Length: 342
Image (cartoon, rainbow, N blue to C red):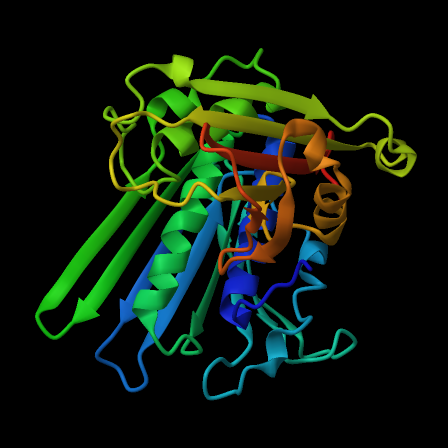
């Protein structure tokens, strides 16, 4: 079944990314989403300062009202529940500053504290930045091992008019060191005429050619030609409650032929990975998608499904019985509304 076993910090991080992406979608202009993480490893306990900023439309603050679900299970010495929010709209004369305490009840007057605004000095821009500090993650390296693939998945979707970057600063005994992750320019400036389904297919192909992002570039040993890839796409159209709500479900499938000579990145051909995106953001695979995958008569395609399990990144892994040795298969599912869902 589809479950989310990640920490509260990871759930909050994903939720804040989700909200930032939606604000950029509303703007309908070229926007930047920047993630900055400062890791204080020499502190006791070690903690992180996480900032997520975007140049989309300003925040109405209403979108943050559901963020307290499950967040307060973290002890107060690990996280005080405080979010620092800075936001402004394109027509606003000021930059608005707030402190939002997720540990306070929705009806509490001390939940939201309005701070003095900052004058924009006749500037014309919009955007939002949300910051918080947390010591919940006992092993910062484990969090980094999760966050980098997460941001890479945002790259994969090739969302129109959205540039994404990640910067990590490590404070250690020997000084500072930095890690950077930037989206490729070609992904940002894809033709706007490309449909979201076509972008999803391009994303999955890139993911497969790089051995599920294990490599920085396409593997030339395994993929001397794209003729080795067989692919297809589909859009949910026969589910009344999906279409009736203005919701779209798109699917892309890539099947890769096994080469006589290939590198060691792919040794297990008996599994297929399913990536799931919701509203242009990586999410754990939904239960409805798990049910749909289970209901498929795979034997019509020469396959026998053993079981579906969830990996640590929220992907579904399809385990096959006696998988044919012709190759392996990867699947991507994207569920979204045509317009901003809130």
